[in-house]
Amino acid sequence: MDKLLITGGYRLNGDVIISGAKNAALPILCAGLLTADDLVLSNVPSLQDVSTMLKLLRQMGLAVTQENGIVTLNGAAVNNWEAPYDMVKTMRASILVLGPLLARFGEAKVSLPGGCAIGSRPVDQHIKGLQAMGAEITIEAGYIHAKAKRLKGAKIVTDMITVTGTENFLMAAALADGETVLENAAREPEVTDLANLLVAMGAKIQGIGTDRLVIQGVDRLHGAAHTVIADRIETATFLCAVAAAGGDITLKNTRSDILDVAMDKLREAGVIITSGPDWIRAQMGARPKAVSFRTTEYPGFPTDMQAQFMALDCIAQGVSKVTETIFENRFMHVQEMNRLGAHIEIDGHTAIVNGVDKLVGAPVMATDLRASASLVIAGLAAEGETLIDRIYHLDRGYDKMEVKLSGVGAHIQRVK
Image (tube, rainbow, N blue to C red; front, side, top):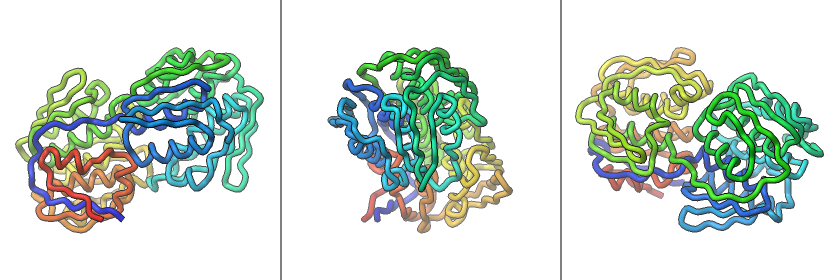
């Protein structure tokens, strides 16, 4: 099992190319099930989760070719409507095949999902929404069985904001009979990216980027070409890394307009940030100041950045209060941070972080995707060597992170 060995205390200087967004690429790949034509996708990140999704889609009969970050999908020969447990258990995003399979083929059998251990993300909202569209759904032996001759337009109001739920409904509604209205829809940029692709394929969607989406179903969707948006979480993770380690880095092939809250918090911590349409420069020459925040749905502070900002708060001047409102188990990195000398106390859904003068390297273990990134940041700022175990979590969502960090001066290497 691979580990990362980091020697801390080195400033970061240079340029980093940001990859395409994992959370946009996964639903967009599933959209390949909606048409028999070619879907040509650029800026697809090289990640474990993307490989898993492509393996699942190939198993269903989708033709897949990959070359230089461009993935071409063709769904003319899809003949298997099952997402088996051994594929789904490693990646919750597999639930995203449910809507498109049901919409185009009238049938789907999808294992109940596994994936990260950060908390229960129930699929009941997906099931209720598709039932409202006329699907007959049963859950048996750990599988969701869904059938519908043709889905019908419906009004769907979810009990909570659900990103994958919104994405499943968008894909299902695109081929449904009549009008579907999604209230309380997720507004994340990755949802918007999927909606823009669906429009390019011939879908009729109004309200893109808002919490009310109106979809007029069409009889068929055609092929399209699309470039996956930049990964805002990878971008913000590298900004936290320079904030913790110090230095001057420029992130390229990214977008600042979908990172307002994170950049405001980094400025509050003392980072000097300048940006253009496709680049962000971050300069840090002092110890960061503590920043408090509360996670919430977009456009609020992203739960996917909570752990990385907490790493920054560990070495900051002052005391910060971090409140997690999305996932109940998302403080599993705290125990590992404290092994490095951090001073964090948990009180329910809130962590109180007392900044310390320095962290000291130690062996630590990654517990989930974003926790692993936070330990990398802590290791960059710590004195001595930090050895991070279970970095397969990191590989699920970060494209060659150690290579990118090495390129800007970090002393980090992958060890077998």
